[in-house]
Length: 205
Image (cartoon, rainbow, N blue to C red; front, side, top):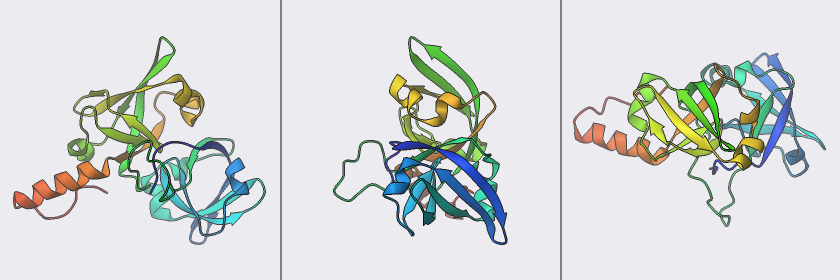
């Protein structure tokens, strides 16, 4: 379980194809405390640390994860948001983030507003039931609040600290981002589906 509060921004060293998928190498100061088998959220995707050295971590990425998230498109030198799992005795400062990406969105617009930044992100139609105005969403693993909501897009506002201390300052329009909808909202929608006799399975991919 994660909070959506980014601890560090790492740099991609390599995304190398393997017989079973990909091996991802990231340069990060979090490597000093990482251990083999630890979970690590990379742009909101929960991965398992395979190797941890003094300055980098390695993680295996399955073909399906590479396909349904933005991880498969990472390139050398790219910046990624990193977060370790929340401790049971730690503070819950963001919202409950599982690291299970529901889909990818596209940055449609970035605009500055008195030192703050607004992002407009479009999303797949299948995710529409899971977005709520003033609700929570994880964008590339960052816990944000839906400040504006349309039929196929939403707006979020970033405070200067979040803009400077995540990878969003390096993003451009048309970039793809990982989206994870609020887990509480997903359970509510599922409960409504069952109550209405439409319990045929989740629409999420």
